[in-house]
Length: 77
Image 1 (cartoon, rainbow, N blue to C red):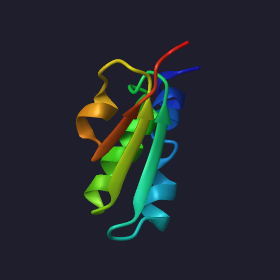
Image 2: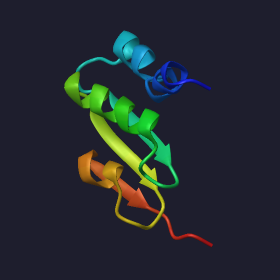
Image 3: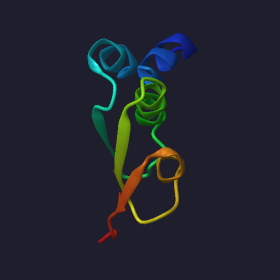
């Protein structure tokens, strides 16, 4: 996989969010690490469109826990 393909993967959800997200819609982001680049980019896009964001992540602090309006951190087993 080359860098352009990786960059496209990192932005994979952004186009869909731009198309459908409306003011005050809610995006629920799921990421075990809370640092998945494509999910973080989706949240940044949703927030730029005045959306509300909820993250469901693992128990460690993460980029999603920093930028989302609400974060639910689940304990690992």
